[in-house]
Image (cartoon, rainbow, N blue to C red; front, top):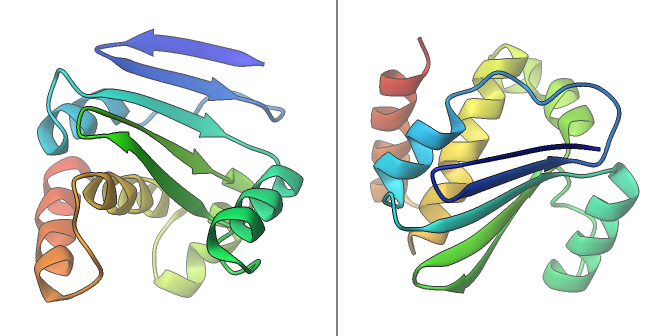
Length: 131
């Protein structure tokens, strides 16, 4: 299992392979703030299915899930296998889609719900961090 901790961001990978090279800390600080304590877990498909069923009541949320603990902390769970397989369906490369979903989940932790305001922010942050 890989583990990185930086700028109130803890990243763990419970699957094989390396942690993707993405500016997670910069994105987190921009959207949630430097003081926000965030845990980012790259989980197995089995764990994502379990989390989706437990917290959403179905198996539809298999790429990313966001769990706010309070206004200053939360967790994002992501399944890289699902993200990789869904990227083309969203007209994105793998790392682009990973960045987009991390932004999406961070905005949920900030309190945003699906809608035009959230979509505008997703686009803004995606343009900034997808370089």
